[in-house]
Amino acid sequence: MDRTGDEGLHLYSYWRSSAAWRVRIGLRLKGLACTIEPVHLLRDGGEQHAAAYAELNPQQLVPLLLHGHRAVSQSLAILEYLEEVWPHAAPLLPATARERARVRALAQLVACDIHPLNNLRVLQYLEREWNVPQDGREAWVRHWIGEGLGAFEALVAENPATGAHCHGDLPGLADCCLVPQLYNARRFGMDVAQWPTLARIEQACLALPAFRDSAPDAQPDAP
Amino acid sequence: MDRTGDEGLHLYSYWRSSAAWRVRIGLRLKGLACTIEPVHLLRDGGEQHAAAYAELNPQQLVPLLLHGHRAVSQSLAILEYLEEVWPHAAPLLPATARERARVRALAQLVACDIHPLNNLRVLQYLEREWNVPQDGREAWVRHWIGEGLGAFEALVAENPATGAHCHGDLPGLADCCLVPQLYNARRFGMDVAQWPTLARIEQACLALPAFRDSAPDAQPDAP
Image 1 (cartoon, chains in turn blue, red):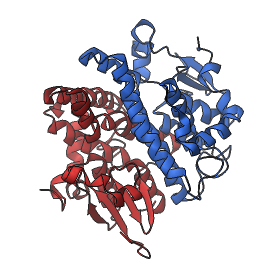
Image 2: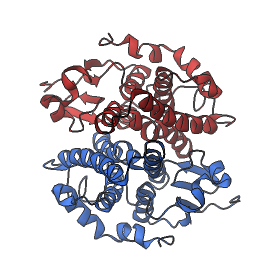
Image 3: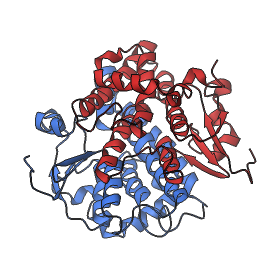
C-alpha cells in the first residue's frame, strides 16, 4: 500500500456497499479515473479489519479514497472533496446556499438516518449479541428504510425544485445516495413503487452510464 | 408557525438532543441570533410527530432551522448552510479541500456512524419490538460510542493537523459534533479519559461561551 509519489485516485470499495457505490457514482459523473481496491467485508472475518487497512482507516469501514498519499474517509466527505477539487466537472451540488442545503439534507437523510442502521456491522451485532433471527433483522432493515425513504418521497414529491433528478434535471449528491439505497430496499424485498417520485428518479439515473457502470454487479469484485 | 416575512433564524430544538446542540454551537460561534423553538421529544408521544411539525420536517426529527420561510433539516446540512451564508463569521471549515475533507470526515464519523444508532427512536424500537431491557440498550449505546470515539481518537491523536481543537487551534465543524457526543458518552456512564486527546479538546471547547451557553442544561426547555 505504498502510494508515495502516486497522485492517482484509489477507492477502497466493496461491490455491494451502498456507501462505496455513492462515491463510485460521483467519480463517474465527474469522469475521474480511479482504481478500485476491493476490500471484502465478509472474507476472513472482514478484510476491513486487517491491520494494513485499519491503519489507513481506523473506522475499518469502506469506502476510503486515497488521492496520492492523502486518505479521505466517509462517503459524503469524499464526494464533497471531489466537488471542491474538481468543481467544474459535473457539479454535484447546485449554485445557491439554499439549494445546496436542500441537496445535502436529502443526502444526509440517507447517509445518516437510513444506511448506518442497516450496515453490516449492525446486523452482525443484532445476531451476535441478541440472537435476533434473520426475519427480525430484515424487519429492522425494512423499518428504517421505510421511515427514511417515506420522508425522502415527501420531500421531493410536488416540490418545484425536484426535476428529472432529486434537484433539477441533472444528477447530483442526493442522487448518488438515493440510487444505492433503493437498490438496498429491493434487496430486502421492498416494493419501490410505494415511492413513485423516487422510482421515477431512479429510472432517470439508471439510464446514465455513471450509475450503471458503478453498480454492484458491474464491479471487479462482484461474484 | 406562520413565519412569512420573518427573515430571522428559528431553531427547532430539544435541550438534550445532541444533533440540535451541534447547531446551537455553530450559531453561537458565528454570533448569530436565533430563537429556540422547543420540541419536546417525549411529551404527548413526542411533539416531533405533531402534524404541524411533520409538515415542516417530514422526518419528524430535530433539529430543523427556519431561515425566514426556508426550512433546512439535518444538522450537518444546517451547519454547512450557516457557513455558506455567513462565511466570514468564525469559519467552521478550514481553507483547503484537503483540510475540509478531514474535518467533514470527523464530523460525519459522529453524525453518521455513532449518533443515529443511539437516537431516541432507535432505543424505542429496541424496547418496543424486541423487549431489549435497559441494560442491553445501554450496552448497545456504549458499544457504538466506543467504536466511533475510539476511531476518532486514533484520527486526531498525534496528527499534526490537530491543535487545541480537532483541526488547528480554532473550533469548527468537528468540534460541534464531538462535544455533544462526549456529553452523551458521559450520560451512559463512559469514562471519557479513555480518549485523552478528545478529553483535552473537550476541555478547550467548554472553556468557550459558545459551547457552554448552548449546552443542554442552559436551554430554555431544560427541566
